[in-house]
Structures are given as C-alpha cells and as structure tokens.
Length: 365
Ligand SMILES: Cc1cc2nc3c(=O)[nH]c(=O)nc-3n(C[C@H](O)[C@H](O)[C@H](O)COP(=O)(O)OP(=O)(O)OC[C@H]3O[C@@H](n4cnc5c(N)ncnc54)[C@H](O)[C@@H]3O)c2cc1C
Image 1 (cartoon, rainbow, N blue to C red):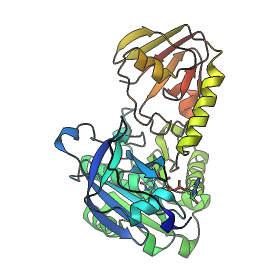
Image 2 (spheres, helix red, strand yellow; image 1 turned 90 degrees about the vertical axis):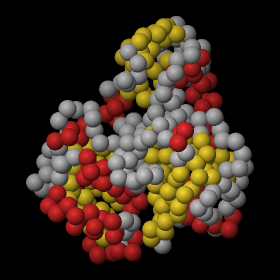
Image 3 (cartoon, rainbow, N blue to C red; image 1 turned 30 degrees about the horizontal axis):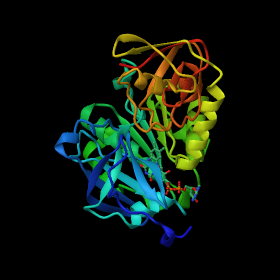
C-alpha cells in the first residue's frame, strides 16, 4: 500500500472513553525513517500520564473509517525529560507508522490512552536495584531501552551495558545522545553497536561473548522478533533466570473488525460455563460479585462498580493484569503476558472469562 492511499487525519472529534487528546509540541526527525513526537500534557492530565521508564502510550488513529490502535514506547525518561516523547520508525507499508512519520505536525492533536506496560525496571524483587543492567535494543526497539537507560543512570548507581543492533550506521536512532551519555558516564555505561551491514545479524555465539562477565544481570530485550529470540534463547541457555529477562514485543493489534469477531467468538464459547461466584481482591479489600454468562472478568468487575485498573480493553496494554488465585478462566487475546506469567496464574481481566463455578482473583496493589 503506497503512502498516498493513507486516509488519516489528526483527531478532531471527541475521543473514545478511555482516551485523551494530547497536542504534539515538537516533531524531531531522528533518522531518514524514524521521528520522535514530543507531547504536551496539560496540568490536569499530568497524574494520569505519569509513566515509568519502559512504558508505552497507545494511539487511536482514524484510518479509512476504522480506528486503529498502535502502541509507541516512551523514549523519554520521567526522571530527565520534561515532556513525554515517543519515537516511531516507519514499517514498510505500515499504515500508522508512515502517517506518523509523514503527516503529523507540531500543533496537531492525537488521541492517546494513558501509559501502560510492564517492560520496566523491576521492583518485584528486593535486590533488583543491585543488579547490573544489560540492555539489548534492535532498530526501533531502542525506544523503551533508551528510557530505561537514561532513568537508571539518573536514579541509580547500576552499571549498564547496551548492545544496540541496526541495519547500518545511518539507521542508528539517538546516536549523538548515546555518544554523549557514554562520554559523561565513563566506565559505568558501555555502548556496543552491532551493524548488520558490517557483521551481519547478531548470533547466539556473539550474545554469549557480549554477556561474558555479566552473569546475574537484569536483562531487557526489545527489537525485531528474530533478534529477541536469539538473545533470549542465548541467555536462557546460559542459565540466566527468566525472572531477570524482560522482553517487549512490538506488534500491531488486529484491526477493529477482526477484534470484534474474536470477541464474539470468545463470548459465545464461554456462555455455557456459568460462574456462580466471583471473588475479587482489590486494594486489599475482598468483594463477592455476580458474573453474567459470557462477560469478561473486567465486565463483571465494572458491572459491580469496582474501580479495577484497565485501559485498552483489547489485550495488549496489560493495565488490567490480575492473578487467578482459585478456579479456572479462559484467556482470549494476549499480547502481554509471558509463558511464565501465565503459568503462575496471571491473566488479563479484559480478555478472560470464568470457566469454573467459583473464581477468585487478586489485582496487584
Ligand atoms: C508495546 C509496544 C510498543 C511499541 N513501541 C514502538 C516504538 O517505540 N516505536 C516503533 O516504531 N514501534 C513501536 N511498536 C510497534 C507499533 O505499535 C506498530 O506495530 C508499528 O508502528 C507498525 O504499525 P503500522 O500501522 O505502521 O503497520 P501496520 O499497518 O500494522 O502493518 C504492519 C505490517 O502488516 C502489513 N499490513 C499492511 N496493511 C495491512 C492490513 N490492511 N492488514 C494487515 N496487515 C497489513 C504491512 O505490510 C506491515 O508489514 C510498539 C508495539 C508495541 C506492542
């Protein structure tokens, strides 16, 4: 599809319920095929748009009569940058990424969901702050990694190694900023560039070589699928703990018509499994609520008036993550939870329906 066929305009209509209109404060051309959008957040939305390094924003973009949702990670750091900034790299024939790169201007208004995501510096284990950080970014996957890198430099004494893979030198996003940071932070920050044009794609043997002497670090990986698979596979084979390996996958959610069809199918499939009792722990309080056949956990919670966290309601942001402590549920779409999280009872309330008579849930504090 050529770019001339795009039918997109910045939002002029009232945004859908969970989203807000934010104005583009600045457009920065980073490389020939990537640009950053700096967003202005009005005072009354600052709390709602507070974010953790590594989180993303979801944009709702009108396209040929549909509203497409696309996530873009924050390249800015809440600890160093006054305004949030996302960086978008063009995907061949991609509908939204090309529009973002070609059409959006400073002063335009965009429809945006609040920050979400779990690809963040870990607070889950007490010694997390002591681990060295080893970051792998490939192409546009540098975006959340860069936010994490800048934040860790600013807020901790952790040593950081960044391995950054790109097609060629001209495609390296944030090249000058990285050079400056490496210079300013001496031995604490090591940046290793890997260029496909020079040495080909990163191999498992090279990953083993690059992480030698960094066993026990906390690892963050974001980039093209094969790049992430190579790095993650190599780390696991070396015996690194899955809990210290964080992975962010950049995918586009299905189009709205496909989502609706999937939703109808999942609802129909769950109509027979009547749940008699749904017990929900939220903010330390337990609630016994009703569940209607076919309703998701989130729909049941909302119908009961519980203010559970949620955002995209399409299974890709992770805002409604909760743990099934008792009973069985069926998860429809999931672009967020890892196999390990699923195995330990995590689910997405917006995509999950009860499949046993009693279900007990807990939302994280
Ligand atoms: C958590 C998260 C964070 C992300 N952060 C970033 C980021 O920081 N920076 C970044 O650049 N990207 C990021 N992404 C990826 C981004 O959200 C989009 O997936 C990407 O920009 C491509 O979107 P698009 O609309 O341009 O492409 P799409 O239109 O979705 O197309 C993707 C591919 O499908 C093909 N396609 C074209 N038309 C159609 C069609 N009608 N139906 C189906 N397929 C079609 C295209 O050929 C293309 O190869 C992130 C994704 C996630 C999930």
